[in-house]
Image 1 (cartoon, rainbow, N blue to C red):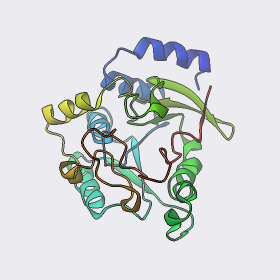
Image 2: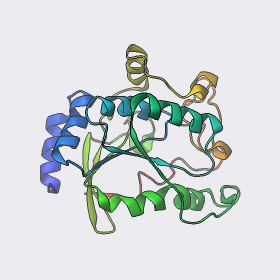
Image 3: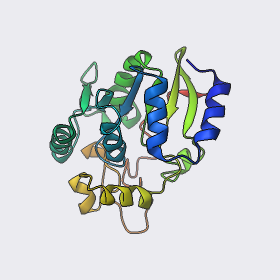
Image 4: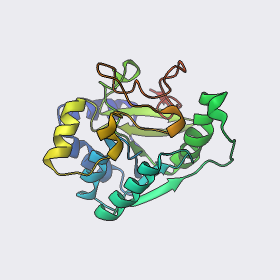
Length: 227
C-alpha cells in the first residue's frame, strides 16, 4: 500500500492526465486489489467502458438497494453483457422496509454504505465516477486521494475528477457508449426511485436526488476519511 505522501505526489503527477491513464495506473499499481463502483445511472458507464478496454476481470460493484428503477436493472444487464464485464451485486444485510420515508440517511446506510463498507477491506484502490463539478460537497476532489475507514487504508481513484458533465457526454457520444434511458426523460442523476426525480432546467445535476429532504449525499463518499 502507498503512503499518503506517495498518493499525494502521484495525484499531482496525474492531475492533467486523461481518465484512461488514471484508471490504468490504478489497475497496474494494485493488481487484483482494484474495484470500480458503478450505479449505471450516470457517468460511471464511461469508466466501465474504459475498464472494458483495460482489464475486464476487474470487479465492478453494483449496490443493489432493492429500490432501483426497472430501467436501471434492465440497462445494467444489457450493458454488462455487451462489454463482458465482471459485475458483482452487493445487497443489504437486512431488509428495513420503506425506511426512506422516515429516515433516508439510515436507509442509504443500510442499503448502500454498509454493503460496500464490509467489501472494501478486500481492495486497495476504489475507483468511482465522482466529479468535482457535480456538487459543492465534491468540489475539492483530486484524481487520487488517500482515505481510511475503520483502520483500513484505500486509495480513492476519481479518473473523471476534472471533467465536466458536458465532457463526459461528449465522450459517451463519440464512443457510442449506451446510457441509461431515463437520461432522455430529464433525469440527470439516477438513484433509487423513491428518492429521485427528473431535474428542471437550470437546476444542478444532482438536484433531483432526495429533493426536499435536506440531503445531498447517500454516504458512500463520506464514510471514509481523507488523509
